[in-house]
Amino acid sequence: MCDTPFSWYQWYVPSQDAELSTLDGLNPPTHGPEAGFGISHVPALTIVWHPTLGRVGDRALLPLRYGGTDVLLSRLEPDFSSPGSSKREPLGDAHVSRTPIRLLRLENECIRIDTQGSPARVVVNGNPLEGCRDLSASDLKAGIVLELANRIVLLLHLDELRQESDDDLGLVGASLGIERVRREIRQLASLDVPVLVRGETGTGKELVARALHYTGARRGRPFVAVNMGAIPPALAASELFGSDRGAFTGAVRSHLGYFGAVKNGTLFLDEVGEMPLDVQAHLLRTLDVGEVQTLGASRIGETEARIVAATDADLEVKVQTGAFRGPLLHRLASYELVIPPLRQRRDDIGRLLVHFLHAELERFGRADQLTASKMGLPTAFIAALVRHDWPGNVRQLRNVVRQLVLGSPDTGPLDPGPALAALMSTTPAPASGGGPSPGGSVWNTAAEAAGPVSKEPISPRRNRKPSDVTEEELLDAMRACNFDLKATAERLGIPRTSIYGLVAQHKVRRASDLDREEIMRSSLECEGTVEQMAKHLGVSKVALQRRMRELKIGGSPDRQT
Image 1 (cartoon, helix red, strand yellow):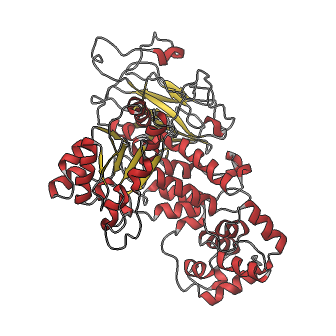
Image 2: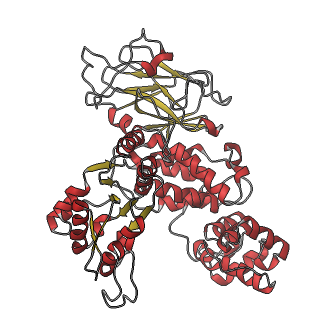
Image 3: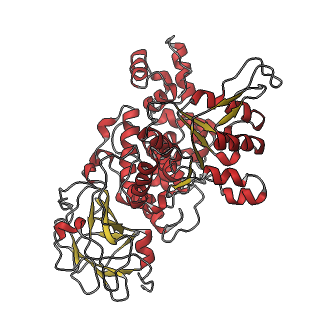
């Protein structure tokens, strides 16, 4: 049942007389009930997953308006284009039906999705669609996830008529939120004003700080990043401003400090809310008059460094409690740049997913797997990623992709089981209007598509008979536990002593089976990093190190990533 109006959206839909091929060139209305909106929002479909990975991120703006013609969705329509490109083409996948499903806007401001007898298998927000379904304004605001023919994942959401820039500034995505961030970076890059970057953990605050530096006039000067949360409070002043020999107990030599190291470049102060109060006073003086007071020195130096600070904390609350100085907050926030959380830019999830898959598969020497057919990821898994609320944001998505790659065999399809298990076991973020909790029905659907390992990701069964463990289950558990036999036994719920018998019974390769040539080849592929070699060879790190010592293989067997 749809009962939420669209009246609070800035909504503009072109008239039926407008040519769809020129949709990107339309201007907002200047009169009538839809006039006066600053930015024109229209419904759009963005490709989140496609058998041709180069199509991920393509979008189609939809001429949906009440009383207008339905939008048809099939193999042949509508036309999609990548941001900034004039080339338009339909989904084009032979497995998607030519018989379209219909999208229309109703009088009560809902969006209706109607299969109208189409044989296509359509899943809407994790639920198979039979007949038609009406979706509300809040559904559209959160993003409606569509799965077509178990092959393609689309996001129906709100977008705007805009012109994307060719320069991505090192930031992946083309959503409204990330385009706004890019626009503000370009405006601020060459201005010598402090900038406070705000955003939840994992949103990419340091990437934004680097983009500010390398886009502006200081690009050829040093960029120094400092995590204030990682510096002991007693050493914070010395680390930032430097110290002379004997300035405090343990200061046996002079120390330049981060301001001295950055010179006239950019100093990025991450987690600035963790800075001690006495250091805050020094920093305020530096921002006001450009002076740097070295600890233990009578001289006062000068600095031309630009300050970019970042925080995920509520600094206003810290000011009220006395943990942060109000004048410093006002000085740092000469301009505030806010990064949207990932749940507010769901149309970027497909782009980020492909970006991280490419990076991780290349990192582990498996770039030949970077095709949708070789990866074999089920659309239910992709759809679950899009609908997740991502409390850890982009960083969490990157870690899930890494788990996906490392938890899968070197050949054959990627196994989403370990990655899905890790994601399902995380604490869900507060509800954000449409995103499911990890225990929701969409996760159950994704778990079924991922295979048996995903169905019981958190609590392993106990007191099982070793004879009940299949070879496939054993191998899946070993991969999920990085081939640690003790952890594998605990995951399977069997005695540790039984795991060795199972390994022998199913003829699972052990580190003792590896010869010198195979280990040396893996060492070259993994750049001598034992953790990566162990995953590549399918054995535990400890067992691999033992085998390398037995074979007297030189190098650095204990090297870590």
